[in-house]
Amino acid sequence: MTVSDTDLGLRQEVRAWVSENWAPDLTVRQWWLRLADSGWGYPTWPLDWFGRGLGPIEAGVVQEELAAADVLGPPSGSGTAMGGPVLFMFGTAGQKQRWLPALARGEEHWAQFFSEPGAGSDLAGVQTRAVRDGSHWIVNGQKVWNSGTLFADRALLVARTDPDVSKHKGIGFFVVDLDQPGVEIRPIRQMNGQAEFNETFLTDVRVPDDNLIGGATDGWAVAMAVLAHERSAFAGGGERQLRSPYAGSRAGFLDRPADQVLAEIRHTAHAANALPIGSLADLVGLARERGRLADPLVRQRIAALHAFSEALRLTSLRAHASARSGGDGTAQSSVAYLGGVQLVRMYRDLVAEIAGPYALLGDTEVAETITTAPAHGIQGGSEQIQRNVIGERLLGLPREPQVDRDVPFRLLRVGTQRD
Image (cartoon, rainbow, N blue to C red; front, top):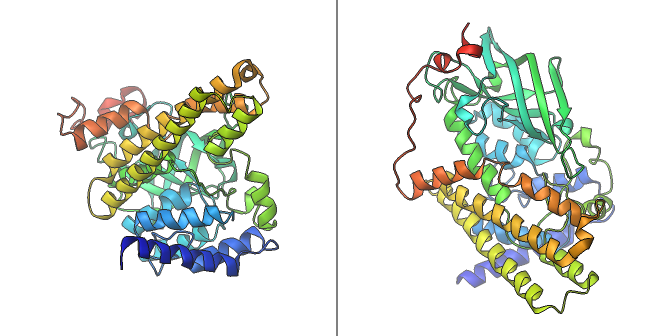
């Protein structure tokens, strides 16, 4: 059987399943349950865990068919994009049984607690402390730039578990329940008028030892695996994108009709800092509206965007394939991430060019696209960090000098860590 025959058979299988299972009167909860049970929602996941064991290229075909069918996408966000993959790599059987069903079915929404005000892009410099107390850990600290936290049930947390070893070695990786005393979430108002990001203060928050993923001081390796998936998720690429609302009961979508929710979010930037005008169809519509569709330069730039987007999509697939085959998916995902940042800026610039003076009006999709773009290149890790990863891991360049690599973390933060 040729590759094209395999591809066609897979497409026909997805189309047949959608035809039999998608219905306008289904609720979001019912639709997500069908997706989870079928394995089409997360086709790269294992067969016995809501997936089909497919490779990244085949999974891309599945996503294209679901998007072409104009159905609601599976639950998205940190839980499924990062929590699920990290559980497959590092989680225990009990942790998978506790958390994966709720994630696959959209019953829970997870946030990510990595960044801190004092750590910058140096994730190994986290100061949030986790101190063992019997069968629990007591967590104190502050996290910032958390996406979608107001609707989250749990969060992926990186915290300092041992300040007496070097900064990369004394880190733990936890899943923390957010519905408990000591968790304070404050939205951060952005210049695009939204508050997608938040800062979270953790005061004597209790985390069961069963919620530790990996060893108590092995969180660095877990976090790196998570970041590889995050960068690939933000990289984007391709034209047909599935859209999904926030999962979990707090967001209020689960028991609403799926087709109504899809219509509601189809033309909104629901994903973390997604561009309101972020597809070729959107650009063509804007150019037609502003009388610029016949402009040869505008048409050339739209075509260039399409070509770049396709190249980025294939780069992201290579990153996933490298990770699945034991290669350095982290470094490959950094390439995809930088490409995604460039793609966003190409959209921003072309949107501004097409709109002209109209772009100065504040309450428009054009203005929101332009003011949302700067978040890319920061979220998911700064561009400078990604270039370091590429230089060291893909190009074989010498590592950046680090005089603190073998120094106990306590000695690096004299003002805040000495106790």
